[in-house]
Figure 1 (cartoon, rainbow, N blue to C red):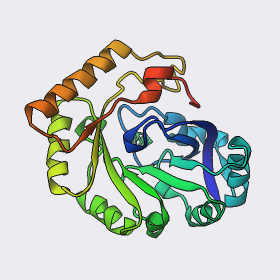
Figure 2: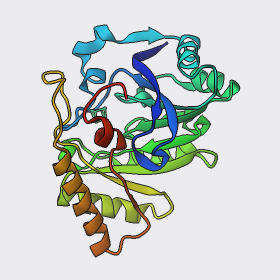
Figure 3: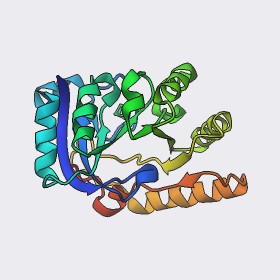
Figure 4: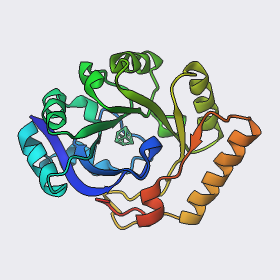
Length: 238
Ligand code: SF4
């Protein structure tokens, strides 16, 4: 059984190299991290467990089929940390129906079924998150993905220290595509679910990041905003 926080869509992927691709989100419940700027605490903190549902692969696919009108599309597995869940059966069932799967995980937990995925987005957390980065685990995640899964590194950047960390990480993995994303430091929280982020501040962070990669002549990178935040601000379920 798989612990689910929410299933919603269709919408479009708002982050990383699949930006703008129509998708249904399957958000799992539970995370082994607690990042300082997490924007999905309702899928992280154990106190929200009563809102999560334990679902079978079949029940999840029935809900996805209903949302997509039975038309196969990209399913984005997010969290929390979806790599904590037993997802092999879901991948097999969904792919048998023609759906494709992308997962977003911080790379702290390695699963053999990473090799079954269509897309694996690894998002190791930078210093500003307050979490510890373990390079060996990232390496193991990349190995588990094998050659059939398209892999990318998506790195959230809040400040210069994060940027330097990302630059060094990218140097270590020259063959893995890298996306940089400015950090939303004013995400909604369980205490303030209606909190609005400062879009002008986010745009300024984006412009700074573009200038920064330009100064370093770092040209084999993509700098992308969080599209859904620009369009819907901190709204949930989009
Ligand atoms: S890893 Fe992701 S879901 Fe988990 S606490 Fe950090 S930002 Fe939130």
